[in-house]
Length: 208
Image (cartoon, rainbow, N blue to C red; front, side, top):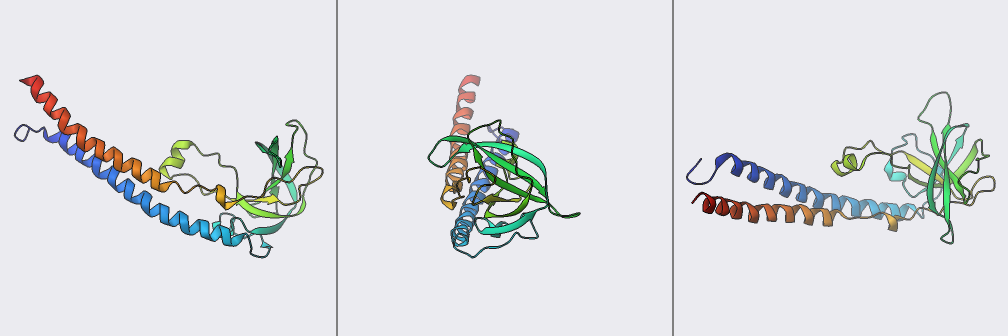
């Protein structure tokens, strides 16, 4: 004890407040970074088509039209989504081999209203908009910023073998909510600063 203020609990609260303020400042920095990235994504929409990058996690290609060759399909994913017109549908996402070595390729080949329809596409040339692959990381890892970088996925602009093309990715759908996160952290810090002295006062009254 130092006077009538408990030392250890006070240090713990002070440390927690400092951490929350630091997280709020970090989120403000992230807000500016996200704004710059969104500006690049919008510019990418009008750039000419280019080859799929050698580095599949190069986010500078996001929302740009890219082309690649799927040597063979090695796996499938099915993801729900909205088809053109707003009807519910199912996205067919292929994992492709691109050669004996290399990171491979992920392609959204289109959508179907039938969740049981077996994809007939076996590979070939594909062109479309570069987008993140589906994110399978946990909510906690995303919140802490510890997720593995996502690879680029090609969203086919034509749809393959009877499938409707998936909606073209739009940068307007990418949220920039870091300001809200910053405000939350600052509010948490403020609440701790207000609540802790009240708790100490209540404790003293109880002891009296």
